[in-house]
Image 1: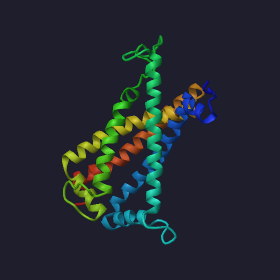
Image 2 (image 1 turned 90 degrees about the vertical axis):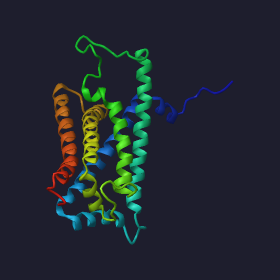
Image 3 (image 1 turned 180 degrees about the vertical axis):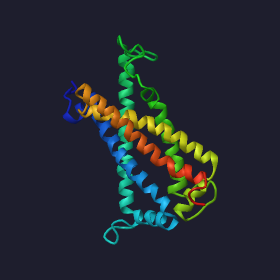
Image 4 (image 1 turned 30 degrees about the horizontal axis):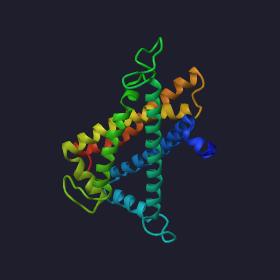
Length: 238
């Protein structure tokens, strides 16, 4: 007769609490990355030399002790691992929620929230927002990181690629749509993640978490959108 013993590691992967914690921690890792990335993008206001120097320094961090681009690739691999963990846990949790509700089209209900516990617009759009973000990240990497596509004109200068791309209306529009999706995702994700990690334990903290989640989402969204919009308007890069 086959053994039915479940090891601690397998029990953890089956635990809904463990999956929610994994989703929260991986999400916070990506929050940190987005804040750093947003701050780096703001170097565009300092001009081409400053922005290109910043981009160059990212590739030579750790030299000569470490190979060229090594720190950047470690960061990418950590982010990729976090993304895989985030999506994997989200898919499993979604399947469990779907099964617990008894099938498609059904949601948990309460006397206060007839539409179910997922009552914010951000939570309702979280799944499709994630798909929009994933597609945009692929395009964004091909454009500004790997220099494979070149709307507005190819260039070896990261600054010039940035300016050339966002001088085109449809590139800016796709960026705005993606960042709106990011904003909703961040707002709901931060609130949910901090709640999972135990920060939401009273009405006062609940209100505080809502304000923090909205504030952080707005700062990141506006921080990412400001340079492209000003480039398109001719204020930057002219």
